[in-house]
Length: 475
Ligand code: BGP
Image 1 (spheres, rainbow, N blue to C red):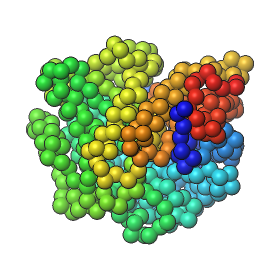
Image 2: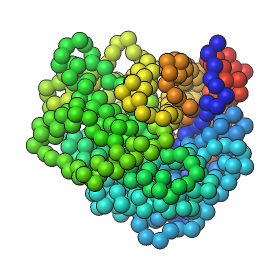
Image 3: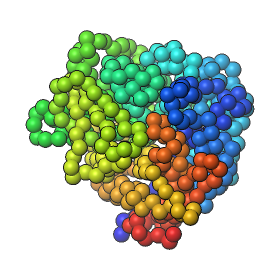
Image 4: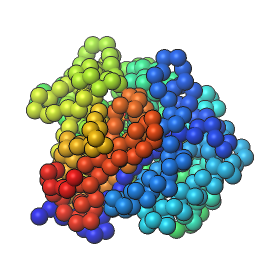
């Protein structure tokens, strides 16, 4: 029988902008998504989202009722410091203190992310993570959070998915400022985010607070599509860019020779440069020995082949299967592996990629302390029939990824918890509201919540610790 230890956490994740709504209430300032999603070209925005700002008590109680041990939420920087810098907004502080109190009263452990894609608009306009001043502003904001919530929060995450941020901003172009194919900018911004993360870890440890701190990375395995040297090189380059670069920074505290070689090749091909200082490298190395955990977000893996044409990326933001393209000049092209199923948004469903990534961290970064899988789940256009949502495909997806985690634990990887994305249906940054992930279905007209079949399955899993097949649940 496949079972999880009693100390393995079963959690569920959300993020501020995607769930809270109430974007102009109680002194909150705008983040860059507020402006971007109000342009004429946008068909959705986060003004109300899942209304967590007003429903948090109900959501936390419902989480508890369904056996969820922990919830991962993020703090909106602009609720605490409306302009990103300057005076503290007490109403914003009070909101999160109330949320954390509710968590405590229900025995639900909060894991709290400081930056989940939502840089304050004024700082975004000054260059966001490309501007090294942002590092200091972020450290200042983190300090305020540690002072205000350090007594309530014992699990901190500095930044969510630096790669998704910089790829979205400078490579894919579906995040503001919507620049495409500028890989050197992505590299510089990612280095700056690693430094910001490191400085916040070092600050947290200097403050001697009683808790743990880590970072969350999206880590998707990259496989060569054939045995050819060219395809292997393409997979290696995408892996360096998206995975090894950030893993080196947070777990080794320095960039390995291979990482520097690959990144330098990529940057020089664009006749560009990047800036790294000794002081920044010292921060990385100090933080790498102090970080308590790695958060790993995993949804998909990619199969890559050599590519010599011009860069061309087409984002599938509608769920119309087969419409995405990802080809980067000088790096490689993602191709469909016919043996691997994909979601309606063309994300390859490949649990083995999670197992491989977990093993790789253990082998290549043996100093890591522990891992939480901080996001995993299936985006799907759920249909509600008579208030019932029979999301068997999601249960299968989660089941198969949890089985991969159990295998990795058996192989000696220290994985201590799993957070399904997401607790309830939330806004999807570049897809709107029809890409649903939640355990709880949200009727976005009424804000009513309805537990999906997956919620009942997850409850049974959390209470029994036994990984049963999708069909094995009362519904
Ligand atoms: C991760 C983000 C989440 C969430 C999830 C699903 O990258 O950390 O915020 O959005 O992906 O992504 P999407 O909504 O694009 O399907």
